[in-house]
Amino acid sequence: MYEALLDKSAIYYLGWYATLQLLLEDRSEAAATKSDVAFALAITLFNFLPAYSVPWISVTATGAYILATSGENTRQNASAAVLLALAFNGLWGPKLFDFFAIYLLRADAALVGAALSATQPGMGWDDTIVGTHDGHRVLIFGPCSSFHNISLGLLCWVAISRLVHQVWRWQDLMIGLVVCIAVVLLNGTRLYLMALAPESFGYWHDGFGETIFTWVTTFTILLISLWSIYRTTERRA
Image (cartoon, rainbow, N blue to C red; front, top):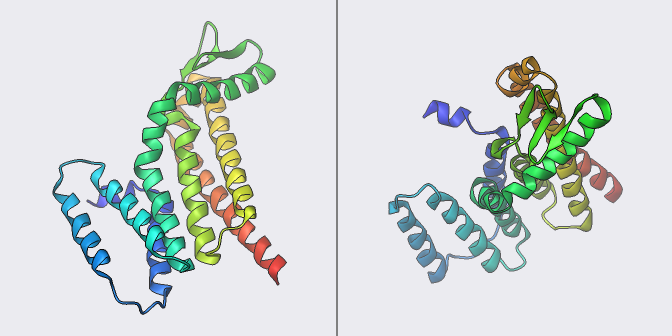
């Protein structure tokens, strides 16, 4: 149980904190309707189904229900957005990746391979393999893709931005794009270093380099999100 909690990213817990905080800050005193009660009872029945995806389907349904019934309640709308971002990171993002996996992996390989061929003599890429043609090579597969970290980065961005500003603005979309670009570049840098030599692969894939990459990615996403909030707040002032 303890190991399962530690296995989750800090951003995952940030998402749940944002959801609960937004709902607690909501001062609406409207009583629950019959539809609310019926929905809550229906969601509890999902727990009896033996499937890993059931909790995330419940989260998706809850987020969609709040979004559909909250009207102009900005805090409820914001909490629904975070719930849907959590569900995308936990279930729908990986499902989407499975469908487009080969194209996303080739895009990662092309990015890293182009950087290798431009900076390292005799190195390049072939399909989803990067490295030298007759020596050390790295096969890029599912867990190595930038896409998984993008969904986590977007979750962080949605959670922080909705905590501060409950109403969406066009600037939010630009910041989301910046988060995606930053994650792709960081993941590409890690893959680049892994392709240089067997020793470098061991360090960045299984060694302390993996921890460095995780924390650098997390703090970069947090800093971008916090910087965007500071900028927009400063402009309003």
